[in-house]
Length: 457
Image (cartoon, rainbow, N blue to C red; front, side, top):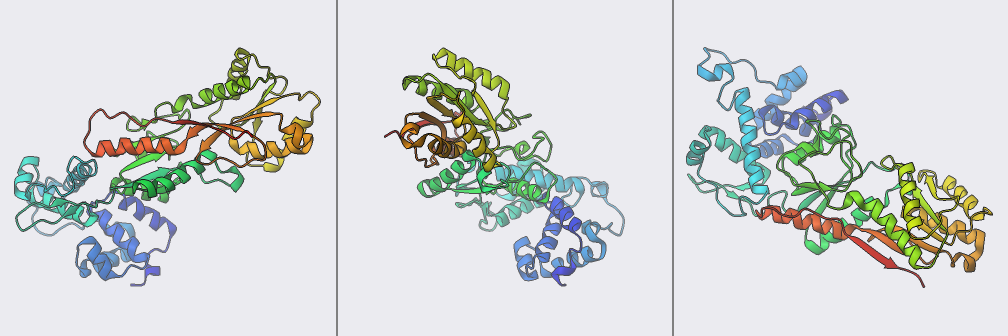
């Protein structure tokens, strides 16, 4: 059967991807077969991957081609129904049996992934373990085989239980969930870029790998469903959120709702936080702590007239934040003057530069210190200051910026950077995740780390 004859409509692929997320139920396996065949995977490889014979693969491809998604469901059997199985009872082939198999696979997988079952440790033989768990021996053997195909288990000798794999899929792999994809390079969030650079450096230093995802906010989107399915299969040891992957984090299909997967991250004022996600300690007070530190830098430098520059984001509350910044400056003996707080957009660099040109050339702009709360604004402001005042006068202005290590902008003027160290924050997340895998209890969660770098000459 030709691959291009299988999926004639985009809605067919979306429906199959939703079914495939229910792994390892039988309908999910059949949906995976159709998706892979539509992508050109040979039938021989499909049969090997799913642990079935080639005739079974051909059967479900024919049924899908004839009846669509409905063709992947089991047809009613012939003959007299027997016992509980006729009512969809406890046998693995019934609907409740498939749900029980799903739950069993997930429990065993999570025990291996979290370190409760150490690498190389052997699981009990199917006969003994089935009796202990209150399931059928056939169901347990199917669960073991599903985990062997996923790479979490290694088959044991005849009659013995399998062993936990030394290289289970999620060992040493983490998922980094960043914000929405930027429309322009200029609008790329500085902390997102810092986290990407830190993840790359840590991959080489600690022997871990970070996969990056920007799944958006629609839990029904195919990309989101595919990412959630990978999380369910424990492809990653843990998830670090720069931003939540869905607007409604309490939605049943939201990634933060998945049980058994270590998740942490940094975010500002979310509408809802899943109780399964442990926030990075200290992140909620970052803006206020950084603002107070920048004010202190300016005061220590002996300055009196300060300007705050900040890009407005949906999480910010400009009026309250401006009032807090003015109060902090007043306590330090500084004046904010008529230019206290700029609500700027990073999506239009030309407009931002025009605003800076007006600011630095205004006759009332007698500032001698500038605190930049978003380091993406630092370079255009320095360019405008140099153009308006010249190099000598521009260097007399004290600049302090909220940066993101290890990614700090190169600017032509002396500046003091103070802000969040992305590398140290990710390290605290990795230490927390490794401690959970090792089976430690009451492990302190990840914590945000700060830094200070002086580039004044």
